[in-house]
Amino acid sequence: EDQVTQSPEALRLQEGESSSLNCSYTVSGLRGLFWYRQDPGKGPEFLFTLYSAGEEKEKERLKATLTKKESFLHITAPKPEDSATYLCAVQASDTGNQFYFGTGTSLTVIP
Amino acid sequence: DTEVTQTPKHLVMGMTNKKSLKCEQHMGHRAMYWYKQKAKKPPELMFVYSYEKLSINESVPSRFSPECPNSSLLNLHLHALQPEDSALYLCASSPSGSHYSNQPQHFGDGTRLSIL
Image (cartoon, rainbow over all chains, first blue to last red; front, top):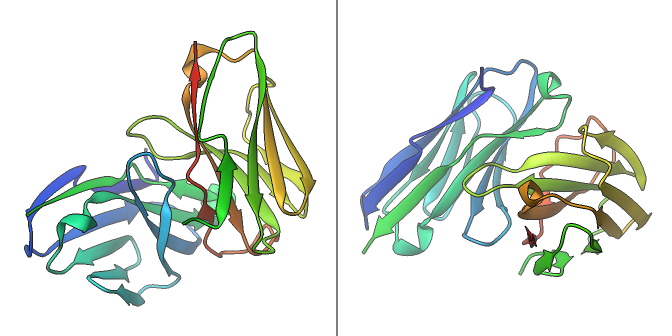
């Protein structure tokens, strides 16, 4: 069973059409949940860290939230430059305190 | 621009060659990582160095040999690789070398490796 699952696998949005990406996890002893953005041919770029249920972080058009079993990355009024793959990673006692990445959501924003 | 610098950006090598990948960070971070990422897959952890000592080896074949000469530099020596080793190799660093640190990792842009 996958410990970290991201959905949807791919998402196409019109510019300005808000939506949410999901990262659900089954690990125990969560120590942190991390969101990254990855552009083609580049390394993951750090966006947010969430440590406990109820926590929220915001940056420009992105807002990340965390519950006990999942995290959402809300994208408000996206622009074409938001197109990328969004990865979440969990760090937990179950994962030996190392990062375990989900398979990502590929976001395309159409002008 | 990323603060973790990886060279070369691209590398093509034969199965009998020996080559090295290099990673540098000048943020004073005390933990450094090597990941392997295949196309449309998430990064997979290979090695972790904490305070310049190898702390985790995720059962990586011996044809991959990591080295941490100092706190800013991380190398990955390659020898007798197989075609299935073709991938993007990512280096990352994080501030604390503690095994229990929960700080974010910062990634370089990787080396795209192709094995002929």
